[in-house]
Length: 313
Image (spheres, rainbow, N blue to C red):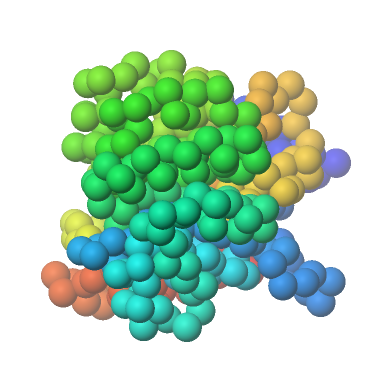
């Protein structure tokens, strides 16, 4: 009965955009975090895909993949161009790297892997080559058919700005994570309020703001973080969202709240909130230690401490 009262209180607070109780929100998230016991098997806590990585940009897909693992996913697959593969592999032996994105039969080679994935990030280090974008368009259509949740960031957002119909009529959650400039570019061409019933926009900035077609799931967050805005932080966020997205969707039925208008959109909102407060906490901790010299790599080292502090596990 006590748990149900906490959950009902949490949901009522979600409905009031600027009056959320962070403790109640975290209680909802904690319910969705899988326990570290001996009952699970490898892959159950998350098999995450990251589509990105090009000649110029190899760090971004690494940051997205490694953050998904450090938060608690079991496996991270990076689908990149062949020239980026060896570099990304050299960053970490933990990442499963597939140099397929520039292959002639890229879609056919990548497609079988999607059956294993719980969520997919599109965009980190992708670049803006239109031949690559043609492949991404086909992959998005496959993802749509397979009903896999996707997080779209960076150059993936550039593609969506040009071709917004790619994410219309998705049955699975779609999360867009634009920064200020990307959001302005997006909103200048598209009505962000009507992009699709399962599309959530996480607008990053001094205040992170969630935009949803369901007003009860919107929120704004300004706690944590620092004035240091080095590259790679958005990639850490997208990978973190991907892991929480799997956890919240897999466990959303445990949140017994009446009259939820859309379970999938609640899961998307909670995933973004969980990831934002975690990455902001990592930023805050790393900045205290490194100050102006802080880099995204420094933030990775604080994922465990921040997670433990926020979620007591």
